[in-house]
Image 1 (tube, rainbow, N blue to C red):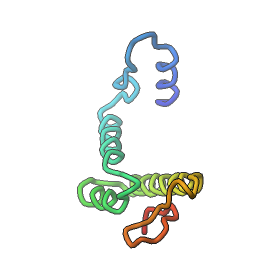
Image 2: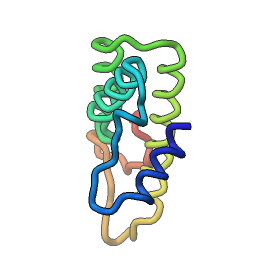
Image 3: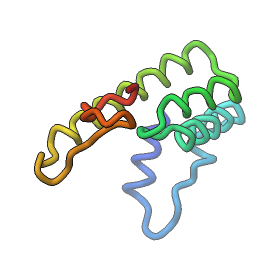
Length: 108
């Protein structure tokens, strides 16, 4: 399993880098890894709709990729809601572009 190998290398390393090539072990896995790095770089909780549009229009996505991306989007939304809920009200008064209080959703 790749994650177990990653953890093993992480725990066993002295000063060396993790050998990602040996973990990913073939060109297909490397290509998928690189694609997801690009997706994560495009996705931003503050501009989620733009990020989704860029991904949808510029990257080839399988149905499984789309499910994973939607799950990641939901994960970001849940974390934004937690962040907003945990902020002191007197310190921060979040508003969206229409001046309405921000509730943590990324789809306003």
